[in-house]
Amino acid sequence: MSPERLRSRTPSSPSATAHRVRSSASTASAEWRFPNHATPPGSSAYYSVRLAAASRRDALAALFAWRAELRALLEQVSDLGVARIKLDWWRSELERILAGEPRHPLSDVLAPAVVAHQLPGQPFVALIASVESALQNPHHPDLASQRRTDEQDLGALFELLTRCEGAIDERQFAQARSAGGWCAQVRRIRDAGLLLRQGREILPSDQLATAGLSQEALIGANGRNQLPELLRAFAEQLHLQPPAQEFASRIPPGLTPAVRIQLRLHQDLLAVLARSGFDVADQRIGLTPLRKLWLAWRTSR
Image (cartoon, rainbow, N blue to C red; front, side):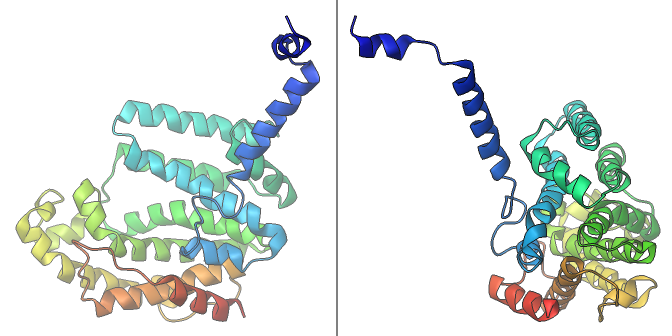
């Protein structure tokens, strides 16, 4: 046998194997740095992160990705038992992140950010709990309950973004959570058609009952015909009812850059949805990337 063939059959040394493992892990982790699948170019999240300080971009992108991975369970896993098992895994992974022993490539990016920015575990727990709540009881009895859930979800993400950008004041955290809840309500309007097709909640039960509808009846032809008017009334509450109305037309002081940009983009999105007559049952209406860039740049200034 030739020396060349003999060398090709010789097992790799432990150091070479370790190097390949580290290289593979590094490549996997790189996929979760900015931009990642949760912050793709052209998205609102992309511009929120892109205009942040360069030293914080990977951390901010990883936070967006953490929420995206959890929320994906609601759309990608049809078996409730499997979804709960996956959610339990992420709950355990959070414990490993906080202990400095992450396993997932996303966690490899997130764990250093948790340490560097002293991110607490509670907002991460809230994001997990919001998905668990949606799995167990996907419908809310009233708007107040729905808003609390939205603050537990997108509001928790906004709190983490705020902390990552250096905020230390509890009032800033509370304001960020409220802003996140408001933006989540705008997203419900934007995504109403998709949510309708998936059989997921758009409006709380009491508002549907006032219109003489149920969650099931909303899917029918009569419900779809009433959807624009229902969404119009829903949007009016985002302008009129406290504490939501403070976010409808202004950006309160104290919000950090990434959250300010998110809020400004959602304000413009709500205006675009209103001009469309809330015709979202069969189309997804959004801002163009150029519009997002312009608004984000002005807001960051």
